[in-house]
Image: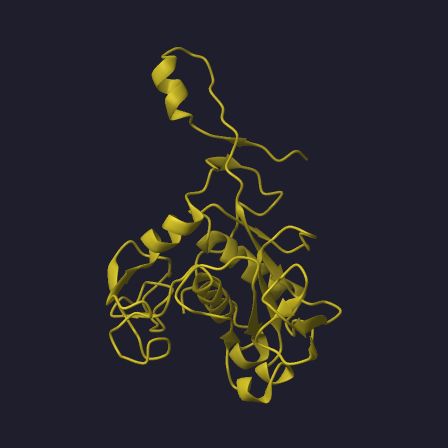
Length: 247
């Protein structure tokens, strides 16, 4: 089956007000690789480099175990993550993209497999408040709940967002970056929300880079850009049955 898309070319519409169909080459999307580490994933200490399997979060060489959930749970989680990032020019894949730079999330068991100090964490990645590509993040499914699709989806999306410079917010439950629950489907909301600040800046209400609010949708859009897809088939998972996390 051939993957195809139809885009509106606004410049063409202005130049030719006829029945002519106008097409433009899509912008190269960011790649988000959801790696279930089927045979285990080996990570080496070194400058962050997802293609080379290097991370500053480990010492020496570490091997993390495979995703502990079922195939169905992984597929539902991946579908949910794809849905969450659908408005943005981010291509979510579950197959190794080879030598292509990507933001990579390794879905594994517990943080203790990386370092004893990570035991009890739900996820971890490098963070300084700025966007970073070609970096590995880790999502610890056993700690989160290996059958909890909503929690796995939200934690994965949050961790990916950290690699785009986003951080936790408060007082806006529907936002994915808010850890509050019972507010329906979550997404990256187009609302100025107060930064949590507790984890990243050390000061409640203050963002890592000194501001006090974050518009999660606008910030992610400013880095990744908008999706080029208006119509797409489901071959690469652009159409998904699962909505955003709704814990």
